[in-house]
Image (cartoon, rainbow, N blue to C red):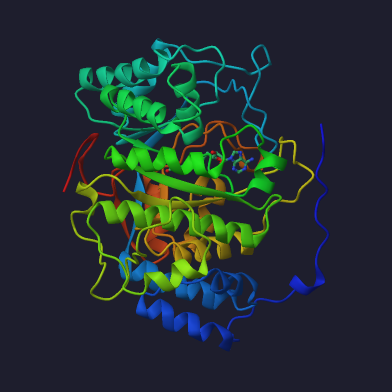
Length: 447
Ligand code: V47
């Protein structure tokens, strides 16, 4: 096992964030935010280095309020991991096991049906499903899993949205289904996504993106797909009409600039997705494309959702599938991983990263403070710093265990509502597609 040394504290980054000491250098960024104009990577650098973190939060809050005035979202959901057996050994991950290890598991049909039934009984609107790259499960297991769930839900007289499989799992499935060709990977990815969609898959979660940077990839999660493949999977999902989310796993061995590049790559992929859905771009988009290196995903005009009168999100945005819904910054938890000698990000770094993500990802409708990883008290603060969503009741969570938590990491609707209300927002229960849920006990519909 190779270890990566914990970074030494850099004295130039030691400053005291102070309330009431505004940084005048942020004013040009404020002007851009008010105009709904795209921020550059250099703007992002400044947002990351200014001691005036509170203005950064305030600016992110301006965007968040413009998009979702007065409300914050939560959902009633249930996470399920079908297996923790994984062919990969990513250094940041404490979830994976090898076959035969203590605690290794693979769920069978009975378990999966039971989880689906419990989800409906508890009024869940969504099941979030991910697992390791299982080396031996056959391809059929995966579409069957979708059908077992939909069948059980129908028997229970309910409805459940299946949000499942990270991009790296989709590529793995294309390989085990023998559909993956190195010279045309898109064809195999499309085949898998279409088959899963036909079997009941409704959207993709945002996991597995980590940080889109080859150096970080090779040091911390070599063997995983790279950014171009991750973006291909999501682009094809969008082309098939599936919505998806995206994450950034920060606070390990990456630099802040690498986070900003990751965010820029995501917003360019979103430009392309929204363009396909008929959104018109910013007339000044060429100025941005000259600022950033081009990639194959970057050829659409910049689309900013808060630009006055041009690109306002339409009320039927949720009816047109095929775009990124939510950015979810995930703070790195070192415990139990191969990188456990690293300190992980601090609370202020988490707050700032959430705010920076909200500001940079100007074409994303939503920013989520995932309470399981951010903690509920911190998520509450993040609602005033760019986040409009704190995720849901979750129930079981096996990927990270904050502060020695068990896999049972459930919270109540009452706790979620109280956290939101106390932060000054109306709590709105949403379904996966961010439609308002009307509820009568465990029965629900969307308005
Ligand atoms: O893909 C793994 C990350 C992700 C660690 O789409 C870690 O709505 C921190 O993607 N420390 C899974 N993070 C979680 C995820 C997610 C969660 C909630 C909602 C949604 C959504 C998506 O967690 C993994 C990986 O990037 N992860 N290990 C760790 N030690």
